[in-house]
Image (tube, rainbow, N blue to C red; front, side, top):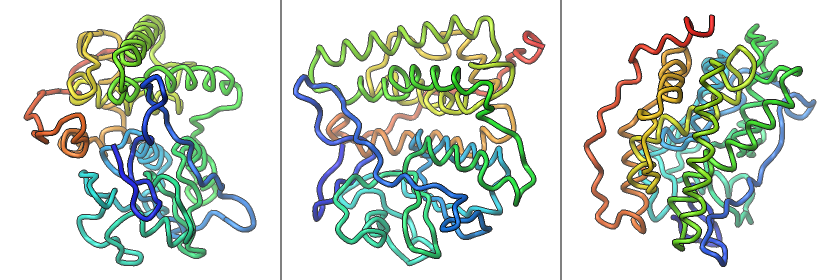
Length: 313
């Protein structure tokens, strides 16, 4: 799950679980924003460090693509294996030649002792971390650079914000974080509680999607992006590795059609890399998979016909 090196916790998951064996996620440490006099929106000033395996980082990449920020904010992708030095780079990263992500954190704050996680939105001028909370970075990308790109598509529209906030909280608690609560539970009771909550929530969303193409309103919002990055990993990793095995997403007709619908929309499939995802989870989590054998399957086709655009036209 992670380790301490020089007082810094290297992991994409939280420190040891609670007294009851339940999974507990540590809060992000850097929560600054872009659009102030100190942090203006500028081309190539900011750099995004991500993992293709991490669902939290993945959702920032999707928002970056949907908002047309590819030429504004460069990215660096870490190696899928999370080992003794935490997140590392297959080749030295382009800004400072660092080999490990923890070097970036301690460049930003020499006495940093928190968790080294992705994504990281980095300020190249001031050599500091702007933000390492994916939910914040999504919101930053949603609006902060509109004047530079001319892309004013809004994935957090004001009239829908209360409904988006409500569904985000529900999905985060029981699905996004729920799969981790199953996978990293340290007691049978904690696992069973997380498992029941996860599939109850999936059943709720399955029923919701029988009547609606998207989670909120009649257009794609950030709520859909946040759910997508968990669903796309579910059958390949969470069913087996995290013991989320009551059924697969492909067995739930509305969720599967919804997943395929989003995957086939521009901006969603670009950074889906199932091999990278499987290598990370199965190889990095030696406490769960001590043999580090990475499965060959499953074979998944997200380009299957779904007809949701016709159903809810």
